[in-house]
View 1 (cartoon, rainbow, N blue to C red):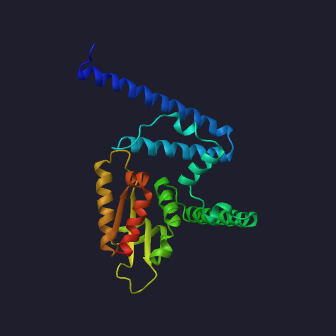
View 2 (tube, one colour):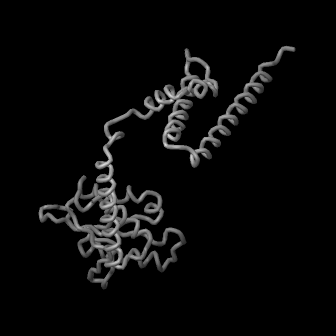
View 3 (cartoon, one colour):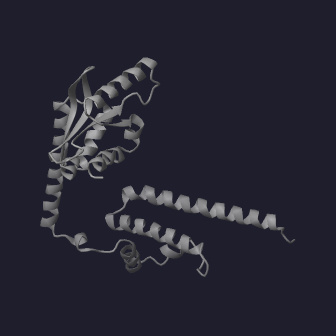
Length: 244
C-alpha cells in the first residue's frame, strides 16, 4: 500500500521523535555516570557530546552523511577517544603545568578569593548595608574592580543634607580626579520592586530625588528587578557614566 504524503511525514515524525528520545536517554545515562567515572572519561564524555552535536548539525546540511548514535562509540578505542578529546579540547601548555606551579596557582587563587570576600564583607559590615539588592550591587562592584577602572570611590549609605532635610543615599560615587566633569553621582536602588507602591511612597521617592538633584547630585536609579536580573549590567552602566 502506498502511503500518502501526510502518512509518510507522520512516520518520519514518529521516527525522529523516538530517535531524539533515545539520544536523551543516552545523555541522561552519561550524566548519571559522571559521579562514578574518572577524569579522562569525564572529558571524553564532554567531547563525545560535542561531536554528536557537530554531526547532528552537519547532518542537517546538504552533502553530509547521515548520523547514527553508535558510530562514535563503536570507533572510540583509547586512541580514537584521545583524538576526539583533542579536537574539542585542544591541549595547551596550561594543561600540563608542573605540580609546583599548580600548587602556587591554587594558593594565589585562594588568596585572591579571600581578599575579595574580606573586602566585600568589610564594606557591608562597616556601612551596615542590609538590603540584599545593595549587597548584590557591592559584590559586583568589587568583582568588576569599578573603583580602579573609573578612578572613583564608592560610599555606601551616605547621608547628605539638602534644603528638604537629610537623606541617606544607597551609594554615592565620587571621582578621585578634580578634573572629572562627572565628579559625583548618587546611585539609588528601588527596594519597592516586588510590591506595589502606595501614593505616599511614590510622592516620598519623588521629593527625595528632587532634593538630591537640587543638592547638585545627578541620580542613577535602578529597579530591584534590574539588580536581580543582571547586577553586572547595572554596575557597568555606572562605569560607563564615568567612562562614556
